[in-house]
Length: 539
Image 1 (spheres, rainbow, N blue to C red):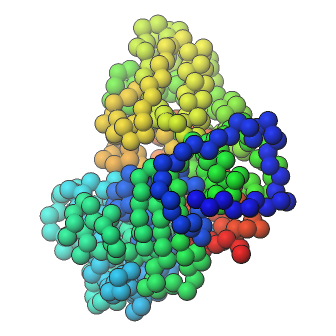
Image 2: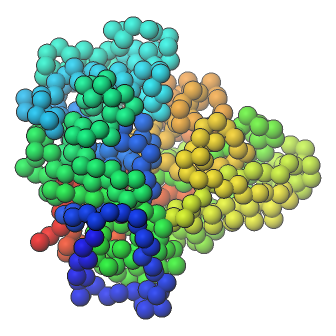
Image 3: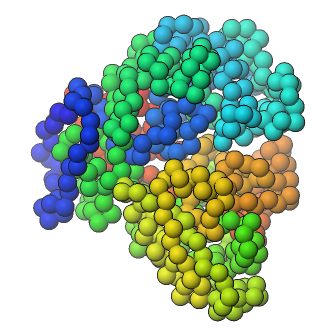
């Protein structure tokens, strides 16, 4: 890997801190340098749009596969993608998309409306177990098909009327439907490759892609290398020809690569040593901004005693969120008493649990555990690895353990798991309490609230409440924006104040480290979405 000269106008960190940094062996083969190198975080588990859920893999998928719309680099909002335009019926329930006549796969073949239908059906097929299938549920009949209540796909409101014309019928008006069309799950994938290679289609050589980049190679524990797609409809505006997404999480290694000029961008705060944050915040390459992200706890409501809402409320009331943000994050995060971030569009704030130790002790006593007596040892599940995210997770777990043991008299044991195993355990409800975070898929309260509907693949708490489900369904069908906002507010209050299957801890802030004189095309936005095709190094 070539070492580039560092700008002399950017001071190194104080030498005592710099000495702690160490470049570990990356175990990679000699590779010609890329035009742009990004420290992307953990190794992706997949590059298949219907399989990815983590932020690192979603970022890797975005430049490879595009949807009808794509995120605007400045705002993160939906803008024309494979569809150059669309019409919306007066009642808001029918969208007619017109695909670009020059939309093509990276292999040169034309992309047409049947490819969109195939891709969306693939996400909805029950056997594919797509965790984001619910993003398609606004479409008429889509939820029934996914849940197996309707076997015939022709009952889904999706029709290719011509090679460049797609008709989509919704159950009800959906204020954020165009934003959904920009999300990775709804990206267009190549039927010919999927049907030929099955689950391994995405790692085949020269796999057809629909986005601004092709996959040159994916080297495990090293990098995903992207190369500009010459057949992409907007290839003239794809700024960097070759981009590397490095798979690294160890903060010292990440930081040293960046400081040595071997990488251009660090995307995430947990990838930087937390002890260096006070110094980094003084530098002009430090960037932070509010985003649609919440760090929270899930509670397994199927296990005794956590099946008792009084126990869950006691835990929430005994959680000092301001202490967590002051001691652990310290980058301007807002302590969270509700689930939906304050910056979310069309949001009316719900009511949650504020810090009140005496009230917490009273509820635990009512539940039959005075001063914690008789309460079983809590299994607090966290994901743990060598990387920076684990440091924040570990420190948060230690703080929670201390405050709950002190305030409630219960015993807490931290159980650490590697990230992929952790996610499986969480989905299977093999925990008492577990740490979680969520970055909004689109700018609307629903992206946080529909996670916890009955049957949602991202619920992972075992919680089910008919009134909550009903309010959310009514909100989905409500054309009046003010009434819809009130329904969502009431649903959020029911969840975070009364039922408490989750405990919000803080609202995330976006964090990037890059020299703005050398890198352009990155714009702070609430979605924290930064299309790679718009980013370039200044020559």
